[in-house]
Image (cartoon, rainbow, N blue to C red):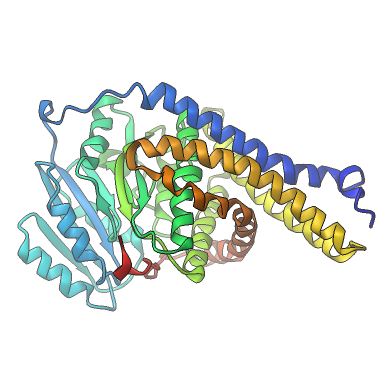
Length: 419
């Protein structure tokens, strides 16, 4: 095949889409981040903690095989200055020593309660049990490796009163605390730039793809209204975000609500995490396809369609790459394709990363990690393609099988080297 046919022949549309889609979306996220900064963040008034009568909150911490991290997390939560809180630890049938640690912590701290479940039935089920046991209208859900900034609960809860009765959830700003190797530092940049930029832009559209499961606050009334979390969905945070927004509950993004978390530091750990995320996104768009035929749901159409466009892009990139691999007459043609496509993606991605990191550095000084951004765009799109394709059979199998979506202990990184 003549290489020029990729740009002028029957495959020109697919080739154009491979180039245009990520380039256009990067520009979209850049514009959205800047607009959110100018219209929301820069106009945010400092929070006067002393001037507000803060309601009591329930902090829910689901656990499954978390003996290495849970004590540190609980000490952090107990030490928060938020005046009225209860901490509910839910052991979801752990196979390690988590159950004994939770029992000890509940005896040690007066505002900590432990719930022992004897069978692993997934994070969504554990959260539901925690909700039933909670005494409060406002629930702050955090992962068992999370370390909340002292001001995070204030910023999260304040949104419910600042924005009105229709706020059903407020998602915080996760940031990486283990920065020991290339993989963790690349994820640090990703969370600040790609994930942060997307949330800022989607919030301007009025709908978001998902709250951050590692740190999110819910209004209990809103959760009850939508039937709580879906226990058959692999990513409970994505699933409940769509249920809330379909019932016209609002979701807010609060970048000042910082949460420090651990991320995988191995290729296999990242792979499992990203496939699970991709599967969760695919499960959601399959379950909620009817939103496209409901005019009242039009504000979520762009978020929904973008998910399909990203899946389509992955297959288009793979198709063009394989086509060239089997039909290219010279090595130069293959090298030219990868060089040209990589340059375009890396160029626009580096601009997006710099702008997004600059914005997020207002809270946690991440701009100094921009050097590590140079590594990420070169492999991000290829990883995304592999993850999307690998998740599809899992999504189909999950939908056919049904039942509880159980979880495994995630790769929390090299704990002993956490900075």
